[in-house]
Structure formats: structure tokens, C-alpha cells
Image (cartoon, rainbow, N blue to C red; front, side):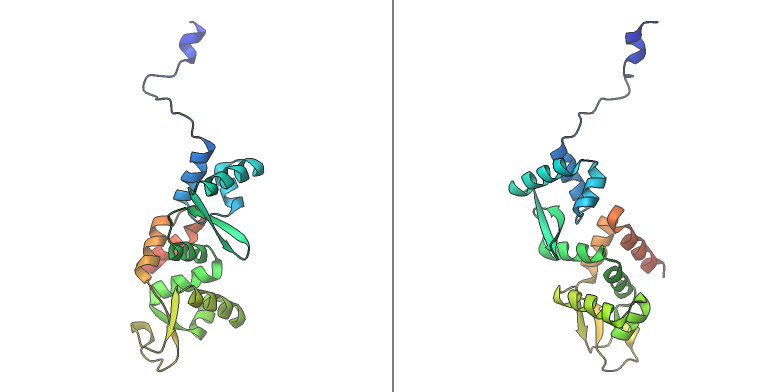
Length: 190
């Protein structure tokens, strides 16, 4: 038996061309939009310097975009619309994700119901609620809904575009957004 015959690739296994670092980064961002640097580093397994170099090049050539929240960038494909970036960003945060889950499930909720459900302080919930109102993800209204029939004229919060939020959770509910996707499964099972 010769060495060459035992080291050959079997005919049924095709050899794939290795993916470049640029393609790898762009593919991970397409698959998991909104990744932070450390998450992208984990997904691509590139060193800090190499990843930063390629991110800078991809931003410069308008292949990807960095969306900043409190000076922390999250990376998206260049053509991702602003509202999608913001929703994905909020879905990756524990408290806002819980609020979104509740509003997908119950349509509308009062502030006290949001506090009770999230099991966070009213100050924390108020901070995140206000961010989501400012981001135009949720809106406060005195209009009634199915889940708040007996509440009266209290302000109730609901998603501005529940279908878009649901679609984003279903489409990108993988690795970093897995908890949100699991939450959506709970919504449909309820």
C-alpha cells in the first residue's frame, strides 16, 4: 500500500475553497446581525488585531456598518435599516427582551405589569421602557386592548410594529438572540 493512495481525499468528498477573513466576518454578521466585537471574535475565532483590521476595511468599503449604543458598536450589514438595528439591539438586552416578549404575548401592558413580569425595579424598567419609547419600538396609549380590558384609562404599552418584531426574532433568533427566539416560541405555545 502506497502513501499516496491512503492520503487521498475520497471522490465523494468535495474540497471547499477556504473562506477569506472578510467573507467569514461578513457572513457571521449577515447570519447574526448586531454582534458586538467580542461576540464576532468568538464566532470568527480571529485575533483582536486581525478582526479589527478587517472590520475597519469592511466599514470603509461600506460592506458593514457599526451602530453605536453608549459607545459600544454592534455590527450589521451596510444596507440594514435603522429600525431593524435598534430592535435587534434591544432584543439582545435581557430586560428589554423580556418586555418585548410580554408585549408579543399580551399585546399591551401597564407599567406595573411590566415591572412585575420582568422582576426588576421600577427604576430599571422605567429606564428601558423610556429607551424603547424613544426608539419607537413601543408606544404608550390609553386605548384598550384584549389583554387590558378592565384597566380603564391607565397608560398601556404596546409594540409599534409587532409583526416586524416577531419576524426579526424568527429570522435572527440564533446564537446571540436565541433567548429571544425561545421566548417567541413560548408566545406561540401559550
